[in-house]
Amino acid sequence: AQTVTQSQPEMSVQEAETVTLSCTYDTSESDYYLFWYKQPPSRQMILVIRQEAYKQQNATENRFSVNFQKAAKSFSLKISDSQLGDAAMYFCAYASGSRLTFGEGTQLTVNP
Amino acid sequence: DVKVTQSSRYLVKRTGEKVFLECVQDMDHENMFWYRQDPGLGLRLIYFSYDVKMKEKGDIPEGYSVSREKKERFSLILESASTNQTSMYLCASWGRGTAENEQFFGPGTRLTVL
Image (cartoon, rainbow over all chains, first blue to last red; front, side, top):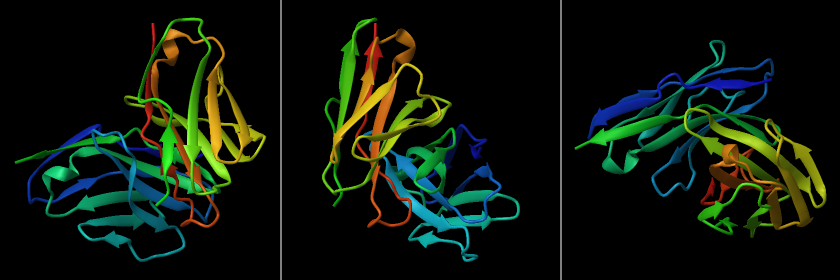
């Protein structure tokens, strides 16, 4: 079974600074997808960024980028120029087929 | 835009009651999912459905059942609610026409069982 681990229950960052959230996963498959979802206080889950395992290039979406290390089974999220609106719970997720497996979540606080 | 709605944002029930959580999506998605979210545990899959009247157990199906009579609607049923089912419940959907494996989520139902 696939597992996803986020070892940082809480992180904090100063506004305008950069923060990196860690995620590792375990799988025996070679073709899969990885995601970072954001859950603000409104509780609405929002997709932040997606990475396809067969693509070597790291995904980027504006201020959000990932460091995907397939051999190490690591998938970290970097948030640059942090904004107050980035404060949320962040979940790393693994997908093979239609099922998602989520990590425990990292609560990000952004300090003004 | 894909829209996934859930019948209640907050729900309070008593131990032993039968509880129905409803989820509706408006994008003709084949796949629908029910998750439970607890602090420190992330989201855990309870059940999912890949077609009308089809269902598969997820990782924590005990104490729950589901119903999918129409493509757009997926119901989660707690036959006899217990206090350990107090949690946040999230519904999601995914269709073959959307970006690979991206699931769209409802706003969640926070259920308290007294």
